[in-house]
Image 1 (cartoon, rainbow, N blue to C red):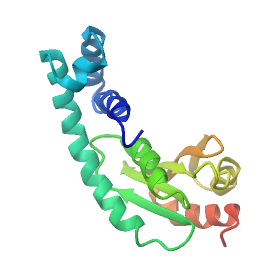
Image 2 (image 1 turned 90 degrees about the horizontal axis):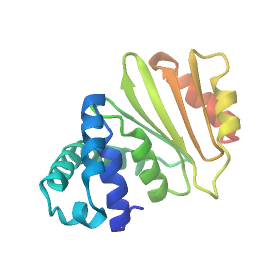
Image 3 (image 1 turned 180 degrees about the vertical axis):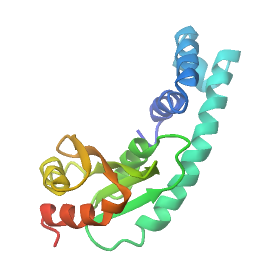
Length: 177
């Protein structure tokens, strides 16, 4: 996913669906007109160049947030690490948490973006890491928050002022305290 041309295609598609819904719908229409993946990878048509230009716009924002996240996460010592992005032009926390989980397989990651007084969380653990879905349920009790997900991938919305309490609850629920 993170080191192949197939992964590039996945990101091109995913990043073109970010931002305004009108932009995403335009991208879907253009995707439907492509003859195949090589047209996109080779940028051999105006439609493919349009898709890759939009992809590069979103990727530039993603790369900036990724750089900030890497700087923060490399300093975290424990098994739970978190990063908050204050840039909310594009919702890339899902994509970022997936890549960072690949890069930091021994950590449980909480990747967040701030929007309207809330933190939108994307939470990941590796396949060999702890199950996080039940721990998330426990961590949200008593907070103005909601969320859910799967054994190793979850999402949640937490009020900004409740985030520290959420992290404490989550650490405890994971048995990291």
